Image (tube, rainbow, N blue to C red; front, side):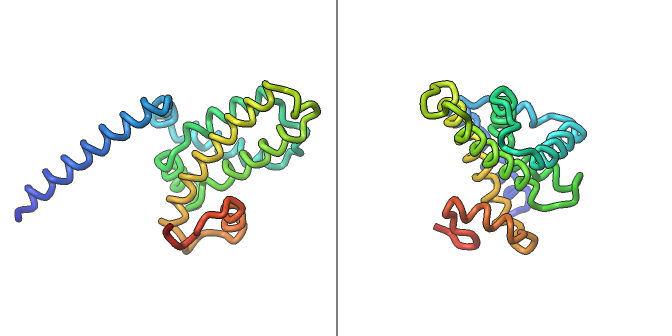
Amino acid sequence: MSTDYEIRKLEARISNLETQVRFLIRVNGLELSALRNAPDEELLKYYQDAVQLLGLREQQFDPDVISVWGELFCQLSEYELVRLQEIVEYDHTWEPFYTLSIKMLTAIRQRKGFSRSVDLKNLYAFLEKARKNLRDAAIIMTKKYPETLPERAKVLLKGDELPLGASK
């Protein structure tokens, strides 16, 4: 088999996978991430903001702020997180975003009137979907970079009862 033939086969497989991903994104109602083409500086700013927000108490998160972050969490994929790796020199760039999503979920649950508020329950459901998106990216990255996975990150994901280091 020639190298040229192998390259053509790989290009065909990639093209097929891209088509399938576009279909799945459309079917699931997800837009192509606006972050896909965002400059490195913008990604870094989101990362730094997430790290900074981790220092706040749950009571300080406004539902409007949570909603904006939920949209960002939905758009983050492994691609953006890998781009951040070189910028921040850290393999597990998903970690502050994931931790922040959990903290925001807690903030929503602790809000007065949560059990009676349809808006808060809807926000919670949206943020939970966003957290699951981050979790999926985190799983991929933990499998790719297990040697640099900090213990706190393992604990975060084990809370989701995920089999780290083992496949289902």
